[in-house]
Amino acid sequence: MAQRSTHIKSVTQHLRIVFRAVQAHSKYVEKQCGLSSAKLWMLYELHSTPGIKVSQLASALAIHPSTCSNMLDKLEEGGFVSKERSKKDQRAVHISLTDKGNSVLKKAPKPAQGELSGALEKLSDENLVLLEQGLGKLVQALHSKNESAALFPIPDTLKEEN
Image 1 (cartoon, rainbow, N blue to C red):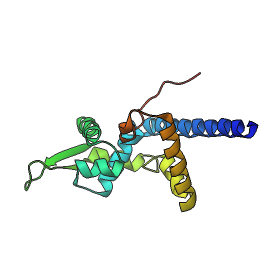
Image 2: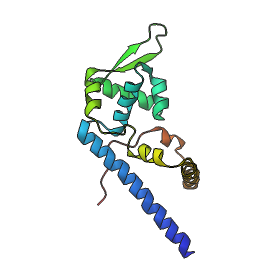
Image 3: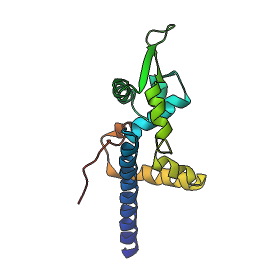
Image 4: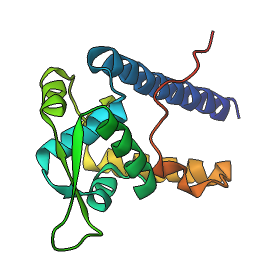
């Protein structure tokens, strides 16, 4: 029983470290380029796939399409991206980086997808599968009623704990 309690405390501490690392990276990114890490990742995706559609971008970022559209609206207002309706299908919108968006990418920190994704890339396939399974079971045990929570990026700023 004591060993289980020790494991629970250890996992809790590890999750805090992961969460704070994501927060710290997000703050660092924002300080360096003035954009959240989620918006920066979006710019990188747009850079690697010019003219991508909103639905494709949302899929690449693993976020909800409406969240993607809202983030793109803010990036467009800031002059980082431009949108163009398809001449073949007026429902389709293609997004591209502006000169300002490209300029931000040149000075932006890497990896584009953030510290967490970069660290996950370093795990062996076996450890990645075990982590995925374990976290899946943890989420189930939490009985989360908000199954769509995974489709929204972590907020740009989070209140600091003392």
